[in-house]
Image 1: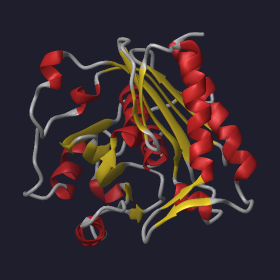
Image 2 (image 1 turned 90 degrees about the vertical axis):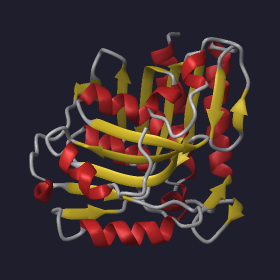
Image 3 (image 1 turned 90 degrees about the horizontal axis):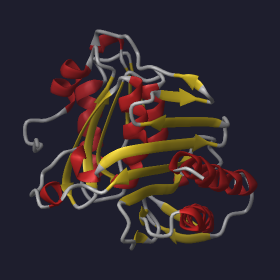
Length: 274
């Protein structure tokens, strides 16, 4: 089984668990003001890690629930077993699973002080995002384009920010809500519409497919963006991500025709640049 095949199999295994549990009585592991962790998250993670370990036991894995799972091989996998857990918990059919494989970053890149860019993730190989509610499978392999259910996808051709459908979100960390409100105030009157949909990996893939035009969120995690980064890059979209803390990223993404204007609009003067 190739790395591409492994990533697809892992994402679909987690997706099958999500389908089986969605709309049922859910066991809650952790419940906070802005987040929730479910037994389903852990079951999806077990399925993904098991699939990867069966074929690539030497590879390292970084996953949302467990964190770093060591390995000495040349590759590291980034996975969010259930992105959009709060939606899943509230029976809102907008969630996904995200699986990506990268070659490890060089020693020089690994030693670069923060803030730093996407090269910190390593060299992209394969990214897969699977959304069970719509049965949509996004797949991208470096240098080979991006597909949705086997059909090629491409970013929007929009050239004006005023035409943009913009995804925006906030996490559970301190300050994220206040920053979200600030961004809504800054963006709402200058774009076509704002949408806070609640699953960043799926949002970014929808941008890659031309459904959204731009996206902004702060303090996303590496497993939120790793697979979608490859899908977006192969679809011709632009992702500008800055790692401000270990595996914590401020993200601006857009179709190429609006990228520079949207970046200036979305990114405040106090945010660091690589």
